[in-house]
Length: 492
Image (cartoon, rainbow, N blue to C red; front, side, top):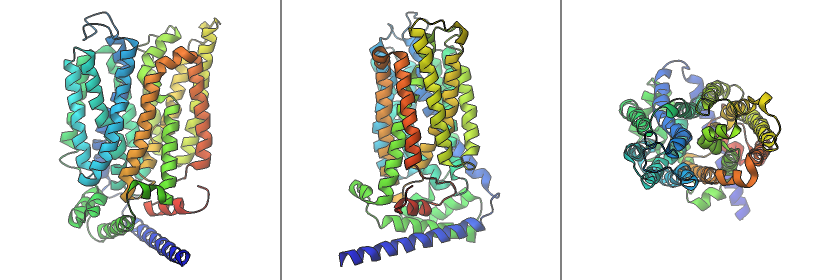
């Protein structure tokens, strides 16, 4: 009897998902693909100013730690140079703050909405740079970087869901990749500007960029229509859709009906954590995203971002360490722009495979250079190899591993569990980030530079296998189709 009831429930659920998918096709086919596109781009670009600040947050330590370690009072705003232990904490405590920021922001976004949550968590970021500009002790830097982590954790956790919910199926991957572009631009800003200005002046620049959000995003861009429907505010959901799509009439009404159907369908499922794990689609989606986040961090990205200038100093090449990161981050940004256009043409999975294989080769070559250097081989003829390796690493990492996991985190979960699932996956990412950033200086003491980068290369090779086996292709699919795919018994 229970088995029969279960089959009936499964059939009803499958019928509901298929009906929603067909309605979505009808909506998508009736939409004018060109009209009203300007505003959605404005919305996504303006909210990703926060992603720009998050990119600066992770790369801030690369140009700043050498200054804080300096004995020159004209360079170091503190009264003494920082130690290796203190530098590790200054770099890593950001990720510790990100853990708390991602967990708390997920719950807040469910109650208050995605937009309000992003605005609220931008305030600790502003306070952070005020504290850094005034800091005279290491403890103040610890507090400032932790506050910065709270806001950064929210950005990684909430922003992909927000962009996914305000986008259309046809452009969701393209718009989702704007986050990666903005992160890369933030990193580029740190490497290009950071070495040549004081720590205090660099903080003032960041205050200006964060304030831009309050003039471009806050007054003009609406809340997610999915959130409005989830709190039964259908009038504001309709107004939000009108503004985001740049149109009125039957098209908006049809999309609103789809959103109502979808939210109602997902709302009928329970949302506690145990039910997230019990639902097959959510469980499989969580396995994919958590796996990608672990792999992303084990590829060593945070070690490279946080210590790039120090890495170049340790190579002993003739390239000035404050100059060498500039071409790396410039090419990194260009590659991220390219991936934005490729993600809807090639798909998520092919780009991830290309990305992980290229990262593996780049890290292996960098480890080989350090091995030759450590064993007293003459490396003068290949002085360019560290720069080429890091440029290659940046290109391949940014065309896939940098942004696609975050894009997928906004696609693989129904709206009723999206906040919880995004918080879990973000938390896993930041635990890995904290561990790698904090442990990298000690890892190099234990394994050497060669062993450390070879370890990252092996992890990138494992990532390639994980993507083949586990990661689904979501290009052009609606949320309902993705859920149905994850619920299927077939290999994803």
